[in-house]
Length: 314
Image (cartoon, rainbow, N blue to C red; front, side, top):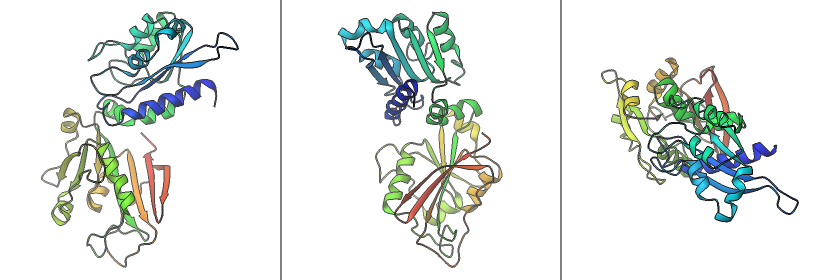
């Protein structure tokens, strides 16, 4: 890992601190590094920040605010690292590109370009026109992955869709068509953590009638996602979800609901939990993992494994 990648990694660490409160804005981290002027004054971080809450200062603003007065003279020879392209437009806050220019920063390293319609390279263009050396694409895939829900919402005009289910070792999601505890207390907590990070959660009418799922975050902290129930008479309206600012949607229904999303190729991520110590002789088979699903993470917690897939074609 080279120097630029090391500081960009720190930007990503900072950005994740805004996971709960930054939305619907993207998570962004920023680091300001002063160049070493001598052996006695090596290169060092003089400012850090992240986007804490929507409507408040962006990562770049908070990074500059953290610089101590005695270090402000170092900004003219400093490099700013930021995981997402600095904004160039007036929204709830002034443009960060203008702030960077006014501070006299000599170099900016950007993780990835912002796909939001009002940015899309304009911030980078403004910095370069001001004479700032700009490097783009450091840990680009990691930076894009961090805000995949934000990018999907703006690029595809729909929420980022996560299909999620738990299955027995032999591939059933229930026991003789009756609910069965497949998750462990720990993996159930992880499921509720995911809910706290999502805007809405959906089940089908049959699951809602049979199991009356609460679909809350009672084993974690945070806000409950909006609760949605669909059936043939009340199909999913993605345009409506987009209009209401729903960036992310978890689908936790039964096989028919889950398979319908797979058949329509309407998904971005799969999260499948398997209990390797539990088998049943009959019941509802788990959905088929589509051929265009690519494993990006596999985690084992005692007897349960959670495998996360991403859509290889999106």
